[in-house]
Length: 205
Image (cartoon, rainbow, N blue to C red; front, side, top):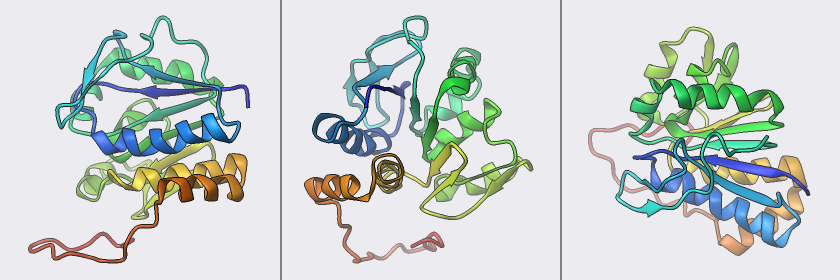
């Protein structure tokens, strides 16, 4: 598959929002004829630091970034700042028309919304931010592990991005490829649920 998969990163992105899907997509690329180019993109093309303090080198800045077939946006505390960053929103708006599919994890959905990509679309986000997303009356907010509406994919928080990624690979490359990647990653979550005093579980659990 000769295609480009772009991962948009910014300071204070949530670690597993990115690294979980990256593991799925990178294995797809290397072992199962997935996208040939996996590009890590940042506004300035510099290192970015996750919300947990891990620093990662990016590949390209916004000016260098070519047309993309797929665009991925994680969430994290950084989205609360970046949602008001005109350059990052303009970048998403510029790349979206030529992207076959666009994906977000967690509060990355708010960047999609600001870019106008969730208008009259079904979407989800982290359980703690569902009401914030509901404030936008043109977004059809659902409490699901992940959603797809046309070419827009969104997922709930953190680990939910892995489920979305496998479903995405299934949709593009087929269930057998998704199954092989799931097996390699040994991603078969335990049904053990630990106590969460003071909190109710999301509806999809």
